[in-house]
Length: 193
Image 1 (cartoon, rainbow, N blue to C red):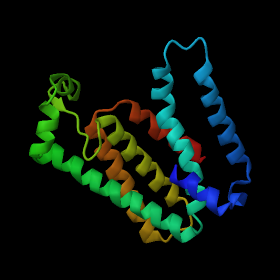
Image 2: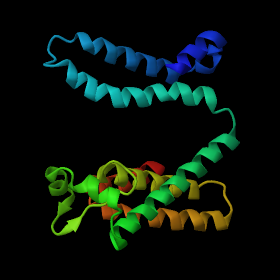
Image 3: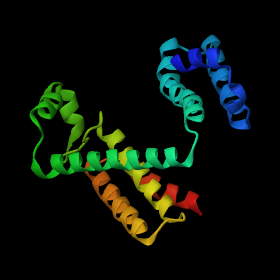
Image 4: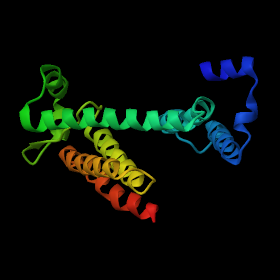
């Protein structure tokens, strides 16, 4: 919201004059129009579906406005990978050491949560994220980012580091016990070629 208020003052809309912006606006407009759908059983279904995806789509405008240089993109990628390394270390901590007291409190607060996360005698890990699925998807996304960057114009030592990080992220992703993330790896690699 603050972004759009700022844009009302700045009036620099030339950043957004491209086909992706028009497609995004059409998609957002269509989803807003879906509120009026008479066949929808409840408005809450629309809210749950559109709020997360719509928020991500709105972030496109924020990123397009603020990301102005390759150096800033490089910084964001390094920050992303650094935060994922922290998440991976947290996953290792949960797997090989023990849960922190606040993690144990969170896990045992609701018996249903424990039943979902303790499967076949093994506790699914979630690291610093809200649940194992988010943890797994973040690890896979970071691994695929590293693989994609390996094919870029980078120095050999950086390619080795990226390969080691990709291996780490894929290995740590296994602690989450999220089967759906296994499919993302070959699908993402196929998109590279």
